[in-house]
Each structure stands twice: as structure tokens, then as C-alpha cells.
Image (cartoon, rainbow, N blue to C red; front, side):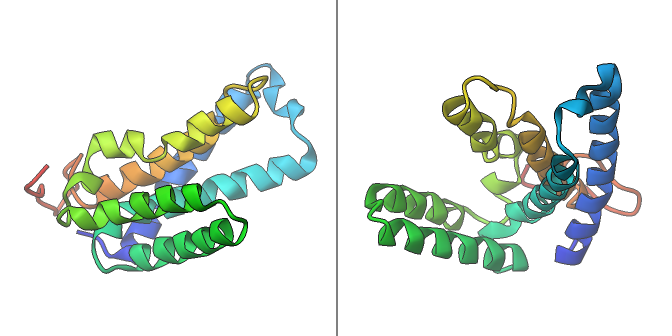
Length: 170
């Protein structure tokens, strides 16, 4: 079991591997040329932030740095939604926010199906907002899944790391 620093370190290592894979994919046919210089800097930074955040996400079901981070973000977003009279969206966000608290630690938030499902809005939102670029969210979804996966690996739930035992309940 890793603490938040261990999860951030693990997410950083996994992100490095993910970024190398993306660089390889985008180097084919020089696909990276579709991006401006600013995008070539901003997108990897955003992907790194997502990877770090989702490296902490599974521990939102317990008192943790990840829980503090996410509930602070949720609170600010909820206040903005209420202030802009998007009360229905604020209600759905509130409903979504209480779901981790309904389970036990290392419950549903530490599963592979949650790893694939929780970041799915990053994949689905561009389909709705930019139908002319349906795969625009794929790198962001990938970064979130990689971060989430790093958490599960660091907790010993997917692959047994040397010196760690597999955790029960998965």
C-alpha cells in the first residue's frame, strides 16, 4: 500500500511511459504537426496533471490527500454551477460526489471497471462538444486510465510488485 507520495511517484513513472508511447504514435506520419507549439507544451502538461489526479482518485473513498483535493475541486465547481443557475447539474455533481463514501475503502473505487468507467466523460465529452473530432478526448482518457492503473498497481491490486503482497477484496 502506497501513500499519496508513492501514488504520485507511481503515476509519474507510468506517465513517462504513456508519454513515450504517445510520442511514438504521433511521430508516425508526423501527426504531431497538426498541433501548434503552444499545444505541444500545454497538452503534455494537461495529460500529466490528469495522470497525477487519477493516480490519487481511488483513495477518494477514505480520508486522504486525494479526497481533500477532489472534494475541494467538486465544491468550487458546485458553487459555480449554483451561482450560474445550473442547479440540475449541481445536483448531479453532488450525487456523483457522495458515491465513493457509500462504499468501503478499497471497494468499488479500486476495481478495473471503475478505472475504465470513471474517466469515461473525458472520452465522451468531445464526442458531444466536437463531433468533427471524435477522438480528441482519447489522449486525455488514456492519461486518466494510466494514472488510475498506476494506483491499482502501487496498491498491489493488479500486478504483484516485488516485496508487496496482493491485497484482498478485489
